[in-house]
Length: 410
Image: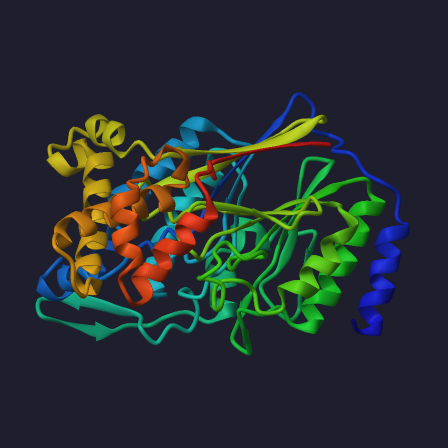
């Protein structure tokens, strides 16, 4: 480990132990990630766009606008103490999507709810930024890091206790006893990494928080810990070991991340947890709710009630009025199609594909504990070659657990 890091860790370890001061009767923080919002004017839902999302990973892009509006309404109605968005705010980094989303977030801020945002790997300098029309698409303008900070200035950047000069990282205070370290892991020069300058800045912020008697929630887009034995390269922060060493003194309550799109919680065995909230754009379209008291912290998930919002708006689209079913069916349809394409030889490929679709849905929702495993179909998948069979095996090895809830005592 580099000498400067050893010195900063020593400062952290010598600092006094902290409690969650200033929490009062409790604090509630909502966290969502991977919204992949697309401004309505950027698509006519024509053939090219429909083929694109049909080959995707189950994001409900045909209803991106309605989902975003329902989510904003639900946040305002719930009135948390803060909302954290941990990256991939937009579908393809288009400036118009960023600007339209910022207007929606301003409604939340105007309701007295602080909003903190980070960019994800889709949000900045995206060469794939496009609008979709008919059988094709046209390139549109994306945003730079500086433009991102300008567009989202009211959502953490303006009121930050400290901002990093080398990235879009910043620190915000939530009450007197809790700080949020928003760590940018998507700089142009170091994608999926944290630079040494940013590590040094983060170490100073943690030491300052500990001296002030505050605990810290850290936030990154990519994962701090592996969330899958198969899906780690490109998903877990490249130099995550340096961050984990930095967090080892335990002013950090947990890390909040996303990127992998599935709901999953990983621990390092030493008390540090990385909570990867599933993509808001993917069934079951859920976000996380952190509740903090002087005694401890809990995390659980809730789904956006798009159907209730649609009824309140007087809409009559049947997909919106039964949105949970629509999103679930759409995700399983895509999973089933991918499974059928992967099956080499089997007496009943439809049964195998159906099994995979249901298993994958449970996995992404974070509720493998509710999935009734069919051992016979599993054995048939284990005889299949290729990535999908390996992916299924990684799911099975993960175990039948509930990744939608976590409780920690202080």
